[in-house]
Image 1 (cartoon, rainbow, N blue to C red):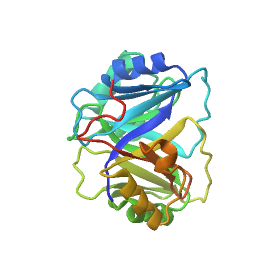
Image 2: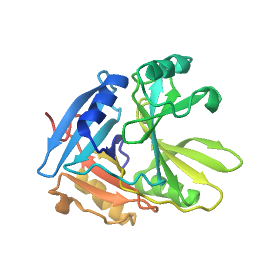
Image 3: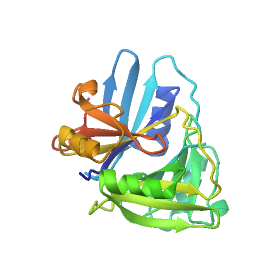
Length: 262
């Protein structure tokens, strides 16, 4: 069982403001929407996103505007072409986006901005994937060995890259043989033994699988957490959690169709 990352979910306090930010500055378009009595989910992505590309899910809980960011959730990262980081960062600045960490402060290799809710958005240089498409999602983990073991044993992901410094390490995990355009999960491990607060502004990662019930059975055999099984989710999706409590959704899509089409 090895599925590509389908989307990453974040909660927002003002849906229209967030939609305007992502559609204006990252040129995203609405791919799908689910309206319930108490919440709205909107799925976004570039117009020309790859079949294996991941979407951004914005969740708006009706009447809720304040969320705790916590520090167990890190950021999403979006792509711009190699050598054009400065130009696209300046474009965002000209459009009035918050100046958080400019390219110079990041050694010219990447940069960061924030969306209206304070979610960090990293800008990375890649030669694959559509402009502004999701490259990876970063989460912080308390034990690198446990985290790497979780993604390799439970989801059959492979170790696709690492960055090690004096104080921390980043490990990138992705499905075996996934296209370069697929999103990765970045596991950040700080060597000082700190613990993290989950908060509620960050929601979950979602993995697309071929067969929901078969994938769920595999996870149970591999001793994954039984958080929300398919039956409790109307057999549309299911949830497990990793060793640090990050939620991971499993969902099944037919022929690449969105779960909740417009």
